[in-house]
Image 1: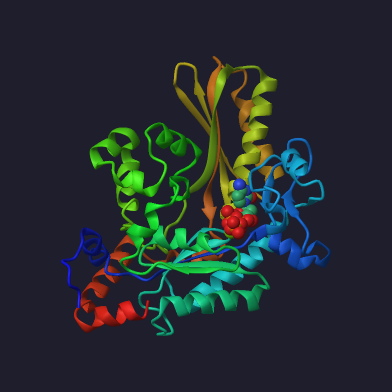
Image 2: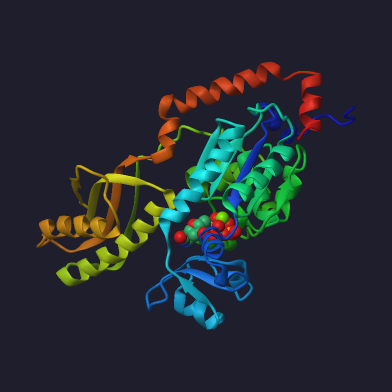
Length: 396
Ligand code: DCP
Ligand code: MG
């Protein structure tokens, strides 16, 4: 029996219907696939990525991380930190295959799977397919099934919303499990550095630091008006997150329309050679995102923003999916050549791949995501009363 009146947090948990959410994230994904497929690499510090002057580390094995090597670090820096580091070229077909296997494991337990990238996904197991009931038990089964099917380890977080489940999956990496039970979310978030909040990147972290916000507890002292004034549309998410609340449903039907990236320059550029070089760098960044998303597409769009802030776009579609980075780059360059000579210098260049084909995600295309989520939400709402609440809690 609860002796105290329900706190606002409990109210919000109720509003979200005490969902059972699991976030699964593979450990050192690309690097682990390489170690699995090449026994010589096991137990050694491994970096996936180019070792050349401009290469960056895509993934670092846990052995390499002990030396401070991590994703997105320039390869030269990584080599300096860890002289014995072994560089391995990426093999996206192998990563995509493992990704398909883990998604099949997820679907064995629920239809409500929202992949975030090749190696991680949110699952809503409030009403799990096999009727197991305990989200913690399901997470353990999933980790074991992934190990059997792929020979790789996964970490999982279990909680009552997406925000907390993702934090939890990171908590006991590698090969770990962490459960944040109903009522524990607000406390869990207090001591965390804001950088661990999903969506807070280096820039937001820096800005928060200037505002005296370093932890969840600091964030929770700021009212919504202050957050809106400083973080615009991000404010509502932050306000709730600082209290362990997140109302976003798991959306299995979310279809990404495009993958792209752009760069704003410190100095406006206009010369053909500088433009081509810039485009190459953008191709590197965007193609990495395309591969991480497991996306394939048919249309490439080049965006140029001129010094007078006018935006020009040029697009080209191909009859088949863009096959690889070389073809992506070639189409991007063809679009750029068409735009030359430029009428004036540009301050921004962007490149996007769209008309995406979603591979195995196509299976999810059948319905309207929001409608379905709302339906599930209300169905669970209907079941939610008296004894059902107690059993849901005990089975968490
Ligand atoms: N990746 C990448 N470039 C980055 C970050 C990631 O190419 N800047 C790729 C390589 C990773 C994979 O995406 O193996 C998954 O990214 P994660 O952030 O989940 O990192 P890992 O799975 O490598 O490690 P962790 O155990 O921390 O999840
Ligand atoms: Mg991972």
